[in-house]
Length: 380
Image (tube, rainbow, N blue to C red; front, side, top):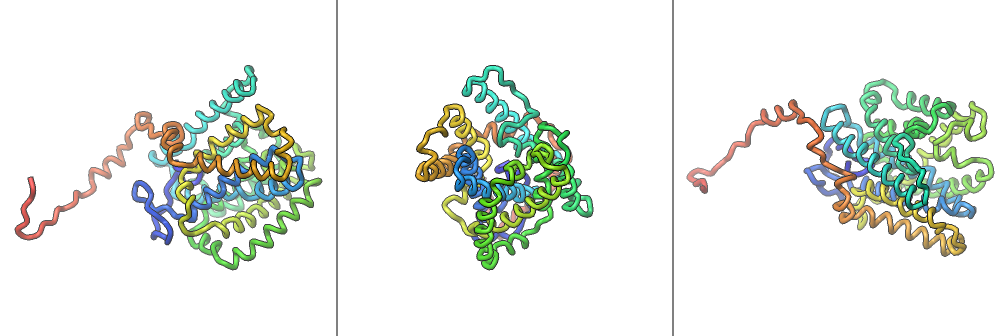
């Protein structure tokens, strides 16, 4: 898995302008790499803002960003999972690109909390994901069930029903963050159903212009609803009863927030550059930034860094924002990828059986015929 979004190659298409070949011959679309980079920056900035929510302006921006940054990631993840099936090579990529990084980093974050926060009794469990690692659990479940969503006739309505059922089921508990798995599921399923022409529609200038008043309206709504709407509704990690609300409000609020998230995701994608930018190549390394940046966030928690009065001033907030964006950018660069590929994108060929069917197909492929001009000699 090269990124959280493209662990399975999408069907080959004509190379769009501004794209370049990826290793292995596949074409990378600059639009999606740009979208993934900008989304990971928003994830890191959002996590930094999350430590300063005593400021109304910061919380407003935080709520707006949390409306669409993960939905955008999940939508793109679904789009690039369209070709996933249970063939051995896809299952192998799922294990090496999702399961192994989850086990490694869940263990690393647990040890970091144990020793960095002086909690010697803190245990290591793979059932209760640390902080942001819920996404890897969700991605595993969504990908492994992709053949189901590709088979049934009306996958999106079914996923919406499951999201609603999750919102009224506090018995699900925290294991593997199944609440988030269910409540964010519609975005993954929607991504599975999208086609390239849908993204071409998003890139229209009219959509870009219309997104401006939408963002303004979102900011005003976030500010106005702060006293009444708990952040848990945007996290999608709890049932309605756990948010001190009647059970019947769960489906209503979840569907409403998912609808708002979809609109905001479209507006975000409308402003993503279509051509190659200085940060386009970083889009292939967003999984590294995603997995690593939380060490910095947690270190700030353990050292009471966020309690400094200067950080709660406008310039302090701006500085923290720039630092978060710069840090996650560095974590997406090639030197970091090369250093940590062994645990983030391990090959692990030793751990898997050779696919006999695939090997047979390779052997059956006709060998290329050498064509020589008349009288041409063969060098020895």
